[in-house]
Length: 423
Image (cartoon, rainbow, N blue to C red; front, side, top):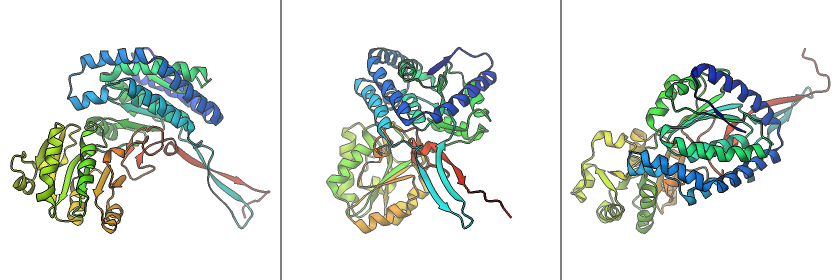
């Protein structure tokens, strides 16, 4: 069941109590059959659909108090289509293969011992997130699928939306017979509870932050438990000299303007100098018509003088808004050098009809996700077939890219013998 806790007076003590309950729930959840976990996700999806009017009313309340940019407002906004996408995401997760029913490797030793490496849940997850109210539902769904208990702490700007979503899902999860404390939510937006989560050694096995730069940096600096974090989405789309121009126009417009506030949005256009005079004015015209603003280097401004001059800091800025940096480069090596200097290893794309160039770029680019002839906004767990995602990992340990159920498992060893003793 999805548990709501009263406003705590002692955040550390409350976190310890929640952690102990989560630990017990995780042990029970890991032993549940896959069919039970999947049934819970389907019941939760049905409950979201049934509660749609209440959820949209709560979201309207959050939107009425929101004072940020339009792009950030879009992250917060819910509508019938987005609610249906949330419900379908839970059903898609339920339809995935059981991530716990996997033997990762097995072998026999000369002494006859048979050794197996077997998938198992991580245990208790802690999720700290901002803005997007669907994140709590996605995270809970993926945690349940992978046999993990989870403690969710959302942001104040989406408080009412998140509460309504959580109340709806609680009914579905409870109906399917999940452990009572498998998913817990503190009824507070006080940042002191975040500090308690970050110090919850022994209660939380893995902290996952999902939000802006400030949140992620705080978690990285203060956490005493392991962190599965993402860097900023300083993503680039590089249009190579051999790009199809119509394709480049379509892909770039989507990569930047489909939803400018998401972490997979392109923040910088890199365009090959050989095609800049012919293609850049058209790209600028396309994007300007969609409401985009620009920050351009000197070479781009030599072609389009009306563009605003970029500062060095602009190329290190994740705008999460309708603003695009533009830099002219001399070939793929120069594009890659720019990515290495300014990127965050989140998502990178190349647009070209030259397969050899594309494959070399995909091999050399260090990002968690690299795309050829496709929008950077495909960096999403749902688009990868994961049903949903808990976030995009950009670190080099454990998991990278969209985090789905399989990425929230670890492994253990089982050794079978026939009476062997060690000499």
